[in-house]
Image (cartoon, rainbow, N blue to C red):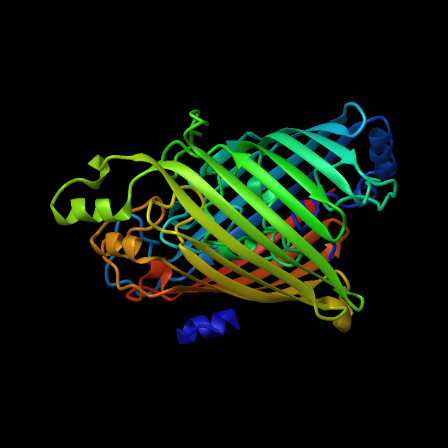
Length: 453
């Protein structure tokens, strides 16, 4: 459907945390007899070992482009590949405490080095890709869980946590190197690009400028309370030193991001649902778009416009509901004030997304999933005027702009080949790429293969 609409050129539970698709699967016995018992024994001894590998291959044909700028998506036919590996290592310390480290070698690129689109097509890719393996410890954090009730409800859905049992009501404190998405804006149907939707604006609210380096990680601390019905989270994070830059700002008293989230879960009959409200503020060393535009129109250099620490307000609403035994629905709304530069995640000032996730058991494929979704994203006046004057951000910049909201359509079929092994075909269509009606539409096809234990 997404591909057809693209060719036509028109658009179409319980409180939980952690990513929606767990890294861990009880499948390693298929490769090494008795290995599952060995991993369970390691956990009994206070050690954690899990892992996953995901490969994505994307391609798009040539598309209409009467002009292009320094940050345009290339209109020529293009293909890219991305590989990511996570090795989850953990050690129990004292009661309720654990330290988690995740070495994550990666290699590959996004289209045009992840430029030219607000709704980038592969959340696995990032700016500054490499053809060689790049080794990083993407997460290294200490977690302390404090039980507030005496029940044991099993394990959390967080793949980077020791197997339960966990109290239904609990406080969790996490500090170290982490990803903001490990804690905020979760959704059981649209949050994990390795098994669900790939597009940036469908994995999270596109208008929230999540704190991160180009690979998606930062330093910070998160305080959580949950009881199975209600949950609250408060996080403080380090922001990038420069717009889209690889270094984090060491002046944490001046530059920072604070996020808060309130969750409410429910059941309609046997079908779980949840609503999440996110509020946030980022204080970054940035310039106002109106000042940058004035410099461009006056014949000056916008890089010479004074930068100062400015605060950007953000808000998002996140909904999920299981409709029946096989179909689930989700929706998100996102907004930021748009006066100062977008800084870390993508360039989008408001967003609205919705979609469906359909299980395959009705046609005899119990481990398969079909997803269909869209995102509508746009810019406020200050950034629109800046781009129309020929300005460039860290993602956008066609040299001129015939503004229109950007539409991203995505559908995928994820096939469960064996426990812990999945393959997917994914089709996307980006209409008005980079919020520019003069360019596109852009159809994108993706093959994805994932193995996990």
